[in-house]
Length: 158
Ligand SMILES: CC(C)(COP(=O)(O)OP(=O)(O)OC[C@H]1O[C@@H](n2cnc3c(N)ncnc32)[C@H](O)[C@@H]1OP(=O)(O)O)[C@@H](O)C(=O)NCCC(=O)NCCS
Image 1 (spheres, rainbow, N blue to C red):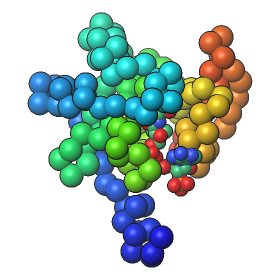
Image 2 (cartoon, rainbow, N blue to C red):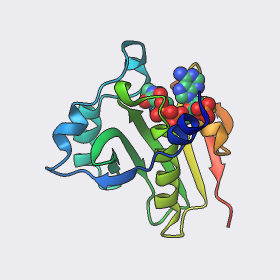
Image 3 (cartoon, rainbow, N blue to C red):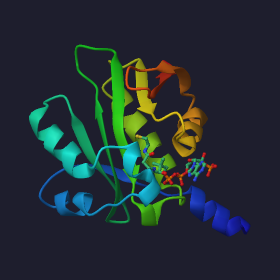
């Protein structure tokens, strides 16, 4: 990769937008690769879940005006722990740095109100892309949960 391509790949600004009528269809149109289907619930399921759960924060991941991914977390006001429990980048947009930019944006948003001191995340143990991505932000693997998913935790520095 040339140096300029490397810079482009790593400098991928994204914004997180609340889900609404303007981006719902684009979120539902996002796709995973066939071999990734079992790694995360479908966006249709997640949006349905978000409608029922007041604590669910659902976000479109938007780059240059295009929806490239979706994530969902909870960060209840009465708790000091946030959980990122859905995260995906469209199969056509993977490997371009959007996932990394989205994790950074989500952590910034979660930390902003100031009551969260720990963020946890979980993923299938064989999900090497997720493992590497989260480890690079300082997430430390703790244990498998009851569904056999790895739980990794990031202590936010204050
Ligand atoms: C995990 C996922 C969100 C990463 O998004 P992405 O936009 O492709 O990620 P990026 O291009 O920003 O890459 C960030 C880091 O992820 C890791 N990564 C991404 N793709 C990888 C792959 N195919 N193999 C190994 N590591 C990979 C690397 O550490 C990479 O950093 P590097 O380029 O400095 O080595 C995306 O692959 C995805 O949607 N996967 C399916 C759903 C999923 O697994 N969600 C997470 C668990 S809930």
